[in-house]
Length: 454
Image (cartoon, rainbow, N blue to C red):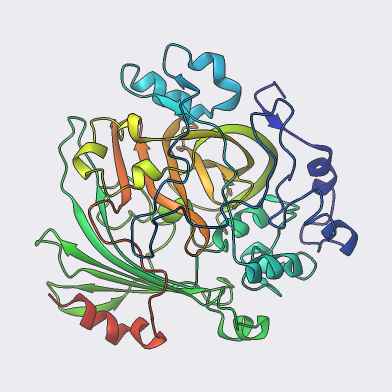
């Protein structure tokens, strides 16, 4: 393979020869916390020093921060090292994805990447790290990779042996135990006009509860509960969605319900999955694009390609700031490049290709997954003509009050329409509440009806 920066390490080659769903041996797992971090990343920096060694991430909040505030930038004094734009993108192509290169071509006068020093800021509670290390020798995929067992709380496969294990790591990465937020979504036209959609969302993660057992998870077969209610504009207000996400989706598929204000009734929604258009997205993303990828992996073949050093949005505290308005962010063609921080990080490259007997509007998806967090950072998406169709980028911050690394904004670019969807706008709203008390009784169809009423 060309020096297009796929680092097919000896480790990955060796792993690809092992049985598809084999467990990691105790000897292999002993690397976690030694040459590998507990999350399975390479602890050492790279050869030229542009990626530093991992030293534990952010371990305390910056001075002046209080819970409930928008997260202060712990790296506010960092300076831009260089800027990548259409004039010099070819020089950096080994560290860019085809989708990123396409954005330079599509918006040669405005799209750019301001590259900052790399800060490996990901950090997690100790109980999550302990569970991740334990999972390494117990977690197993079941039902052809459509579910798993013998894992809890932490990443199930910190030393992945195949693409399915890597995508399950993204699905089950730690994002707290409960979270409540109000955030915005917008899909600007090519000229830049948009309608801001306001959404109330809350999520209760059963998988990451400190007291959860693997036996409970297998018996109940629930990973998390998710509820979303549209608050504005008025014509959409009250529309609501409820999801019970299952651990083994072959044993029991995702359970979903919607509430429609016009009909004033709750209906089961088995189509809330795969390539059904996402909620109020103007058709610019699919349901399984949410969170960069979610749900059953059953329609694709998954291949772990190796690792790549890539420029990705990271530590995007400026984009997250309550000192920035939505109007400043939502510029024509793409979000405001001056507000985005890029850094060079190592990512796992996972290629998903549609199975011959399955249907989806995406024939191929290439996921670039941050090695320190298992957060998908970039996705290149191809249509059924094998043409690059969409490009998604996740803008990541460490919510150090939890702590966890997660997105502050997800942006999906549709290359043919020259439009994009920005999901997660939180600058002009209250900050996420990671300590919300969210009883299970709030995630029933009856509770959805009450939530959806105007």
